Image (cartoon, rainbow, N blue to C red; front, side, top):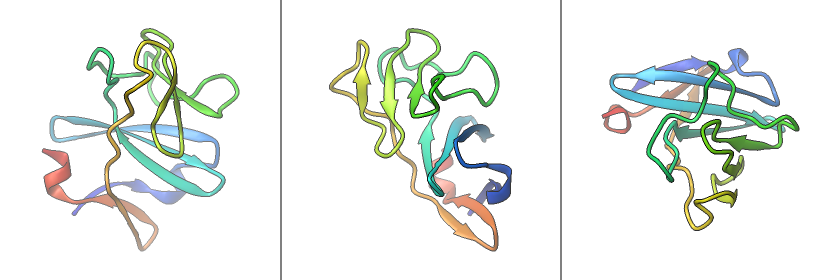
Length: 109
């Protein structure tokens, strides 16, 4: 198991980027639920933020790719606007244990 961060580091309505091995991961907390995705836009295969930890649009209701403005639902990573409408973000399975968010090591490779 690889520790990403403490649950308390991720406030409701906020996002956070974490680097694990050679993989970039984004975390979002919405309505108390945590969502973990690979930080990789399905359109261009690039990291999605220009400013560290800034993955949400101005309304904080959608994940945004800062490079071309594609919008993704937080709940399931489905693209709802932009050039990748049929695509979605790659969700990463995670566990919360003793107040920390973990992924399995094979998900970090």
